[in-house]
Image (cartoon, rainbow, N blue to C red; front, side, top):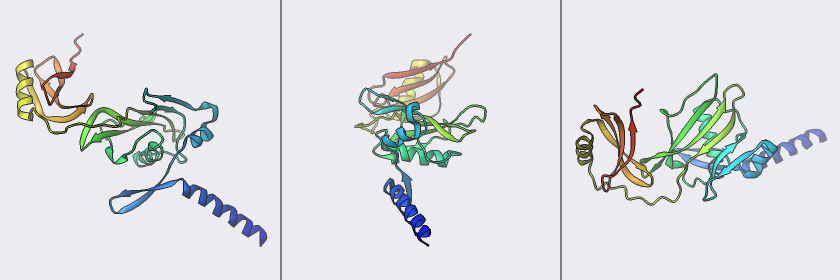
Amino acid sequence: MKKFFLILSVFIMVVSVVSCKKEKSSDNESDIEYTKITMEDLKSINGDDLEIEYKSDGVIKYIGGEFAYFPVTDKDKAYEAFMGISELIGIENTEDFVYDENASYENPNGLNHYYFSQYYEGIKIHGAFVRISVNPQQTDCIHLDSTYEPNLDIDTNPKISEKEAIKRAEEKYGAEVKENPELVIRKKKLAWDMDLLGSETERIIMRADNGEIIYEDKEIID
């Protein structure tokens, strides 16, 4: 009987410790608990194999090693891992990140890559994301890359309308703008992202305040 109460006491202590490391996050009408990973956790899980790189502002941009206490087998588990590590890599508002179905991909012969793209006031930030890479055989996170952009203060009202942006692009490149341009943020500037038809320049990003072209993607001709 004493042995039973001893085992029960140990179980309660373990549950209490784990519970202290969890934080509730509102998801519509349900509350989901995510285990928050600390630097001490990373060191404990990985030992001397842990590799961390920082950006110039001190924010973590790369983690080489495991950072989840559970197998990551799909995008839902990848999201759980992202929520657990988000605080450690400096993310204040996880609501600003959305799972990117187009960028993410699974490779049974290599790695599975799950992307979470960053948005600002509902506008996608070009090139800002958190990528979780997973070994599909062992289902453990092996590294994380973050291009998270903190402390943004951007006017999201374009001074150049979509119609005007299309006109400027077609006149400059002598080409047709494919479908509707997408309003994005690049280099902390509001901009129009456009695909072109009939030009060696296949895609451009034009600032929405002064019309400056800040990105060009040209066709590679052999």
